[in-house]
Length: 381
Image (cartoon, rainbow, N blue to C red; front, top):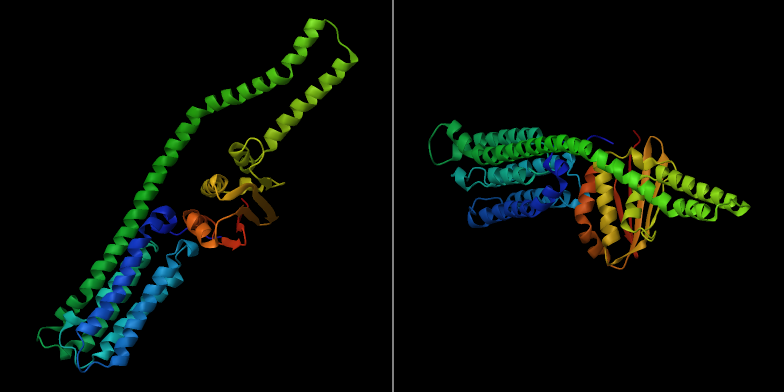
């Protein structure tokens, strides 16, 4: 699986999810702008089929923005961005062609502004450098269209002035989107770097306390199993065959407990912590494949498991996790039974899906009947 791209969505998936309503508004506004300008600035000489085609191209671009920014389809891919950019440019060209020879005022043209809005809508989802390239391509397309239209404008000024006016909206919005993407990613990465340093320092400080806690757990186990046995021996003052048998049982019990604790993976420990009585589900991970997950992947999986276990509409004992060795990958499956409807389940877990799709690029979500099933894979390190 490839590394994550330097986008706001892949750096901070939940932050990008919170921004999606703004993205939807921008996409809808781009279509509304094209539709409104076409209707209310309609020229008698306009070729109506081309004008409609221009609106269709912008609508296609906006639809791709809406669909690709969905958390159920994350991450937002470069292919989607290219489709948006090309559709926006085709809309610009179709708009210009529909009014060719009749367009006397450049300020009535909506193509540049719509292109800029589409670039702005992509800001949380694509890298800053890619947005810069897209902005340059859009500006070149706008400039070419303006140069072709310039002879028909009513105001007689140098063509370069018209070009400047035409490219200003797309440059302003496009550069703004690129600056946002670059700044957001840089600030988040700096924050993560500082947080990583603080985490390491905290881990060093917590290590003695953890060691004492483990030691106390061992002492508690001895007090529960060994101390009563020896106390009984001291009180009776003799050792019988039954005592020898009981000593063997106590030793075996302690050894089994130590082996079980040392072999338990962090994934199994999560379920044990969620429900100490063992009713929180099962984990099948015979080769300790969970240890191959990265820190971010562990955090995301831990979060979704805890969400499932605390979901009132889910049957916690039905929670099952299976890890399968498919070298060089690990295939993972998480399944739980829920009483909620398909739509409700997807909405409830949408933030978790958004994060998982960034960290596990092949995530598959299946809601079949009463079962929610997640399938994904990750590299073995």
